[in-house]
Amino acid sequence: GSRDGQGQILQRFPEKDWEDNPFPQGIELFCQPSGWQLFMERNPPTFFVAVLTDINSERHYCACFTFWEPIESAQPQSHPRNGDGEEEEEPSSPVQPAQLFAPKSLVLVSRLDHAEVFRNSLGLIYTIYVDGLNVSLENVIGNLLTCTIPITGGAQ
Image (cartoon, rainbow, N blue to C red; front, side, top):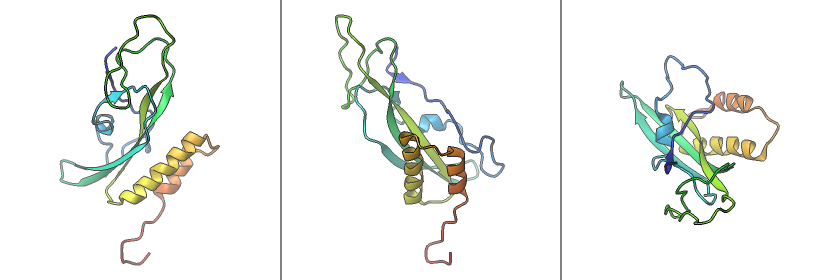
């Protein structure tokens, strides 16, 4: 029963580290700078890109798309947040627990700085997930990774 939960990685692609591009440790902490909190209402999706620098001074652009999903609540959660970030008062009598929403983040890590491509790619994955389309996410991600991005002003 604390206000903040802890993020956990549910799925990642690739499943094993690539030698020249290891998986960023602690990325689940980075996805929610304000902490993993439950809310009483569904917030609109958010998107941001941050730059992480590794030990070799290599830049890694981390695009994060966060949306909120309803969760099943077996028992009332203590101090859920409303949309304004304020704590809700706990009811004095037993009532049906309110619907709570938890954040879920899609993260794309790249050495390339293409924020709009990242936003569009994560938006596509989000749409496939939310609409429950009968498409393998592994295939979608594989197709996205094999796309050629032209250099600005250069040949395709």
